[in-house]
Amino acid sequence: MKWLSNPISFGSFTLPFSLQDFLLKFALPVVIFLIGALIITLLILRITRRYVKEESRRKLILLWTRRIIRIIVLAGIILSAGSLMGAEAYRAFGNFFRILSKPFFSSGNTKISVVTLLLIVPVIAVASWTGKIVTASLESRAFKRFGLDAEQSFTIGRLLRYSAMVLVFIFGISIIGIDLSAIGVLFGVLGIGIGFGLQSVIADFFAGITLISMGLVKEGDRISVGEYEGIIRHIRLMNTELLTFENETLIIPNSQLTGGTIHNYSYKDRRVVIVNEVDVSYDSDLDEVIVLLKGIADRNPWLQKDSEILVRVRAFASSGITMHMRTWIRDVGNRAEAISWTNLEIWRNFALHHVEIPFPQRVVHMKGTESNDLSRPEIRQSSVPIENAPD
Image 1 (tube, rainbow, N blue to C red):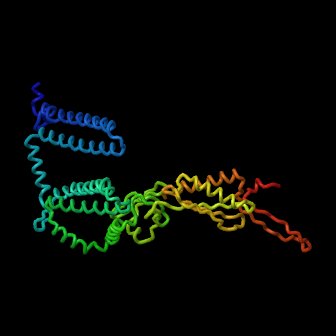
Image 2: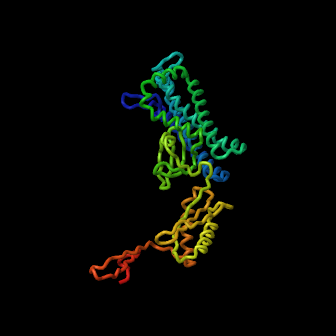
Image 3: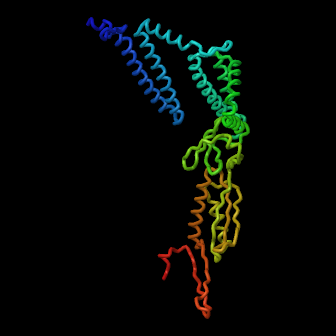
């Protein structure tokens, strides 16, 4: 068994550890770390299934558990590798760290190196995480306590979120050794050269601030921009994410929202009026038709209680009398369903009460082919297909 304690060699190249050291100092700890991570994950999964009822919170807990466990396992593998390599590993790591720490840009007290740039990444992550925590905490407690509506909560929450992110970011880069005055000078010099090329980016940025601060739109609003209509999912500083009713995601620059007309169906009030029009025959009893339409609207599942239902005779059209009905519903998100339900109920109730919905008709008078023929035959056009027309 002496070969287990001898250093591992490949020809003339000899490793600074033996097979026994490899098994005891690296392989065994790595296996223990992996088994421990699996056991902890299964325990957390079982606990969350038993005590956490909300699916979203359960997924969030499992997500962060896996992330933390992966970081711990990775750190354990690195430490095991360092223990296996011995002093040479720490010497090599020290030389590598000194290379990365060598500054490539210096200005006053500011020295920027590769390590400094790498440290900016966790600073940004912590700033983003802090902003989300601040918004979630305020929305669940403070906003409800002060009785703020959805628009006010969204505006204040977003402003506080980005303020917290900026403060944490400034504090973080100060800790890692970046002087803010040097950054200001650097951005001032770069701004002269690239300012004209970033006009659209700057416009989108300030448009995002305008949208958030003025509360023109908020997440969850149903809006129409140009030819597109959908629900706002996220409002960011540079762009807004719009989910259409065809399940298509549109990324709209904020400058397009502030530079044109925004049709916001739920700006101040999510209630909305739906309009249904139907033609009835000239032989119909209009009083009966009005009663039928009001009864249908009153049974609408999305009806706004204690609202006025308006049924009017809109026009005497060429093929029938046009009836116009306006109904208030509680939420604009149910607009399409409410219109479809009402149309279907109109069709069913009219058929049940023998109220005719006429199809377009046109009578064409044709002169006879002979001069003494004074007859004028009538040709009636309808929506009946030619192949099904009577002989």
